[in-house]
Length: 281
Image 1 (tube, rainbow, N blue to C red):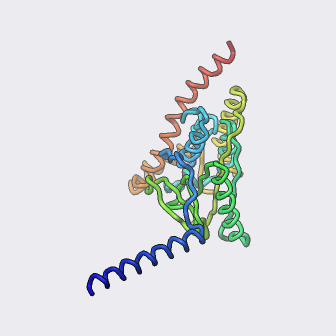
Image 2: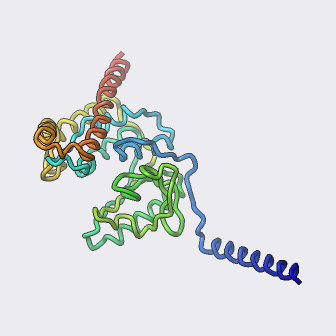
């Protein structure tokens, strides 16, 4: 009798498993993903994600060249309290535009929580990411985990699968309705396609031009209470000299981010000289 009961229990369990598998297939919950799409760790997570996407497309580019021709290698954005938001709290459109010179095309969705169309933007981002992944194009987005950028390597009916800071091995699904529904309140999703790189001399010229422009802290790119260029360095120096409390996380994070950029600036200028010399022969 006990054996018979165990037999019925096993049969019943198998039936439940089959039903669950059937339901899952009908709902289409299986993840669709991009194989071999890996996150590239960088302090400037936007650039790390951009580099990841380019590597996925087999675009021949190194980090110093990407940081350089995008202008990011020369950027600076600092507030008097050395807030860790400095590296991301500015309008980075010129950086995004110059990344195209590396040989990509880009589509994106940008929306804000305090706008009436926010839910529409969340839906638009989800639909565009799904379509991109179906077409074998990599994506990345803002604040899927903490306020940084993350590559999006898959999706299902619930939302996004992603990897980056604090989830290097991957995480998900994150419900698509939650993207941007945070204190910062910004929904951002970027779709990267393969394009055509710009001629080297023009790419270098445009990068240095935007570097000079950003260093002047124009209000169209830099928010109030933040400064770039030499004024930014003056604020940074003053903060460290007048208030030891400002030597905590904000100071450390800004140091890590902007040091990465300056290191790549030096490498980029050396590489640019080599490339310009070789093309002029």
